[in-house]
Image (cartoon, rainbow, N blue to C red):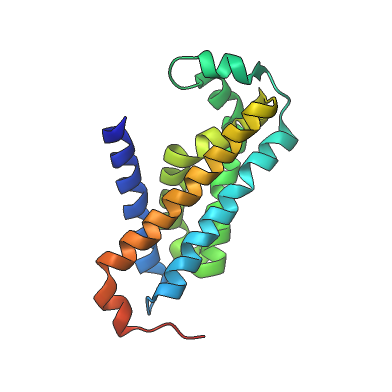
Length: 170
């Protein structure tokens, strides 16, 4: 799993860095952090939306016993997943760039992030959670926050010189 997660993380981070560079004329640490926080906050709404939209069709115990991805749940959540992915791309484009010029690249980034990080969040409403299962949901969200922090720190480390030449303005 380590190799798969490394590819997922590298692909997601690369897409985030690529679109950030497209959207930002003067990159600086504060704008990079805000860019990543925007995605993290938007992804944080996905579990609540899933719970509102879906009724559970499987218990957490059944989901935990399943080997591999929960394809039937992913397929059932697919319309919401597509809608949320497009909505995230629209929101990020409007907040940080231009819908006309930046929507395509931001959509690509949103799709990559959804495939690697968001699918478990979209199916949460389809799973019946007991007390212990809520810790798992918190773990999913915590993992996304941790990955986001790694993206922020890695980009700052790799682009330190460029970011220092363009100090943050308040």
